[in-house]
Every structure is written in C-alpha cells, then in structure tokens.
Image (tube, rainbow, N blue to C red; front, side):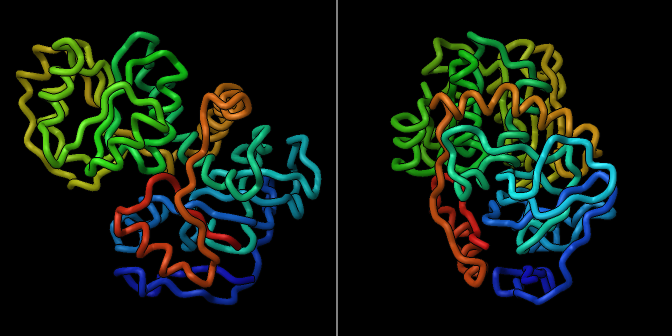
Length: 327
C-alpha cells in the first residue's frame, strides 16, 4: 500500500510517499480501507519533530480517517460488517491506504454526512467533546472562549458549545475569519486578536464578565491573558502548545478567581479511555450532525500525491475548516 512517511524533521518537503506492507489487524482491531484522512496540527508538529507518536503507534502521521471496513482481527466484538462505512480515531497511521485500529475507536458515519467529509470529524469531535463537556463540564448559560475560531477544533467547538446553550466567544486573526465565526459558525462574540486584547474585548462585549471556560490551542503565549480572561471559578483547558510550552503565571490572580488550569491530550490516552470518549461522541455529537445543529466545514481536499501541497496550505493559515487527504 501507499503511505506517507516523514524522512526527517522539517517542512512539507520531508513528507515522502512510500510503498509499504499493509497492516495486519491484531486482537480487537479492524482493518479499514481508507477513503480520506484529516490533517491536524498534531501532524504538523510531528513533521517538525516536536510531537512523536506515543509508544507502539505507527510512525505514519494521521489521527483520523474515514473509509470502509476491510477485515477483522481476532476478538472483535463490535457489531460491524465488512464494507461498513466508518470513521476512526487513531494514534497514528492515517496517511495510508489502509489502517488497523482498535474497534473501540471506530464509529459508523453520522446520518447526513458523506464518506469523504466524515474524515473531518473523529479527532476534532472527540477532542472538543472530551474537553468542553467531559472535562470542563460546560453548562448552558456559561460563557466559553474558544481560540482559533476557523481551525478544525474551533469550527467544531463553536458549534458544539452553541448547541449546549453556551454564550460563545472566539478569537481569529483576520476580519474574514471573524466574519465566518459569527455568520457561519454562530459565535456570539468574535475578536480579532491581531487588533484587540482578547481579554479586555471579551469583558467589554460580555457585560464585564469573563469566560467560565476557555479552550486554548496556543499555550504559553496566551497563558497570562487567558487567566485575565477567566471569570471567577473559571476553567482554562489547554489542549495545544502552538505558542510555546513555558509561560509566566500570576498565581495570585488564579487563586483570587478560584480558577483552574487543566492540561489534556487525546492522542496518548489508552484505548479504553478513547473508547469511552468515542461512545459519548456517538451518543451526543452524531445526533447534532444528523439534525444540522453542527455542520462540518471542509476548506480543501488534496489527493495523497499532493500531501506536501496539503501541508503547505495548512501551514499558510489560510484555511477555514478542515483540510483533507484523499486516498
């Protein structure tokens, strides 16, 4: 089969398509013929040498795919059949024509979503639901601040939070992205971080109140501003480190607000935990996709042979929504 490998840490030019043996599903795994794979920031960080796959995971990048079940390993108890259209959450291996994945991390497509578009869903849906709902316990009527409005995480998080009845504030770096966040995604407040201090702007537009929950993909660069933006008893959930790993924190400000900072990652979690999250996604997020409360947003799709161009486009920051590879 054809698969993408990273020859050495670097830019998109280090991505190579190789012919390699197809994976063999082990106990509890299903083999999927991949139709499409989603690009994620984690893939870029892995390509740059900053985010190696967890022990035992494939060196091939790619954390989410859509496709059809091709075969089963021993001891698979989930009610799937060969040929079923599915999506899968992966620890790696998605940029390939086939992938073997634990059955717990596989779901049938939600109603109303085509097989290619479905590749945009499993990683972001699992990340957003597990962090906003399962970890931060976001409640109706609370204010949530979501950084990176028009990225894959942002587009899912804004819509999910609105569906749960939250007041949604978000940040983006251009006027066009700010407009998309409000007009298409339904954000109540959209802040251009290139022109405004987002903590001050949030409070000015939210009756003086900060955020009960912040979903942050930036990390150190935003740490102090995030704490300033928190409301009393607020929860800052850090899921990305695009802006660095070390920052200065005013603990007095955190204590005075009785607030919490939580760091989480989905990729290294054990299979059992991922299975719990995927079951919750099927029960809670899939119905929202079926009835239109959440709409997938795909910016652009590239054939596998153009994987370097796909990463160049992703790196440019121009995309609004998910970038997909077609296998």
